[in-house]
Image (spheres, rainbow, N blue to C red):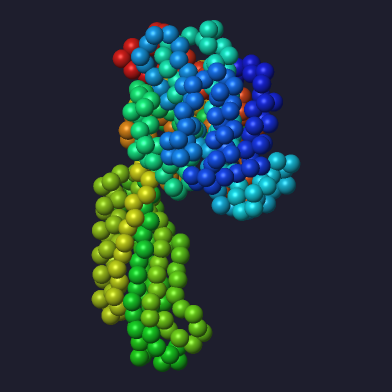
Amino acid sequence: MTTLNIPFIADLTAIRHDLHAHPELAFKETRTSEVVARELNSYGLAVHRGLAGTGVVGVLRKGDSRRAIGLRADMDALPLQEKGECPHRSRNEGRMHACGHDGHTAMLLGAARYLAEHRDELDFDGTVYFVFQPAEESEGGAAVMIADGLFEQFPMDAIFGLHNWPGIPVGEMAVMPGAVMAGTCTFEISVRGHGCHAAMPQEGVDTLVVSSHLVLALQTVVARNVHPCESAVVSVTQIHSGEAWNVIPDDAVLRGTIRTFTGEIQDLVERAIERLCRGIASVFAAQISVRFDHCYPPTINSRAETEICQRVATDLLGRDKVRENDLPSMGAEDFAYMLRARPGCYVWLGNGPGTGGCTLHNPHYDFNDAILPIGVSYWVRLVETALGVNADRDGA
């Protein structure tokens, strides 16, 4: 592994710990964006604020090329009570950096600082936009930044993202073209039966029995409708019904999530769910309606930009440390919106086994500070490769 010599790693670690101790939720990253803007200003970068409210974009230019790329980090935390005992544990009740966005922000700040301090020594020609995005966790901050004019104000040829990944060893990365994260959709199924006394079920239409059949039937949607070589997930995550021990309730509500990689499979899954609802309603003489709410689209890496990232990761870590088999994931990521607007690539950076074996979104999770220099080195080498003086002048 040939990471850069980064003398200010202790500074980045301190920033990361400070952000971890002061987590902020979606669109409320006021303190975090202040820290980011202050740091970027201290590096001598032009700083722009206000996209999606708390978004920050730093700008670094070198040479006279019109080529430009974006590097993105997410800043928000999760509504989760931290249970770990690290010295920098969250001081904000019910909020926690349980996904490593504090580390992502610190690594991108480190790349901005290194590139600014070594601008004259590094072999690139063009503009780098450092995009610090709010509200990745379920709120679609990327889409809001785009709607607020991200790509009009900061025209870039390509954009790149990175996420730490527990379970991948430190010093390894996962990079592949095509779909790397699923699109996500929520569903809500409303069941109307006929309430009655629990001792006299023959007088009613039992919404809980209907709901139980729905839960089991929904498990066949993927298994018996989706081609075995395609991927999809349908998970029921909530059932709400009833308030008394001796009453069969009138109504029930089921909620859950659908994960797919293509619009065609998403449509197929939705139609299958609608058919099941109609059929079960008929069997039990109930009324069933279903509503779908489309959330994040699939995260799709473009081939040319992925090849750049694979080359950078291979040069940095070694060919045997660049993985493809870990991807894709049925998790979702709002960087997908940026990749729908511009070509680019989203990669996973190995975070090791995780604190106590914890993965993302766990109340004991903590970002691994040992990967800070790897992330900074990756970003810097990516800039040199994508905007290198001998790179393709037609784009990143």
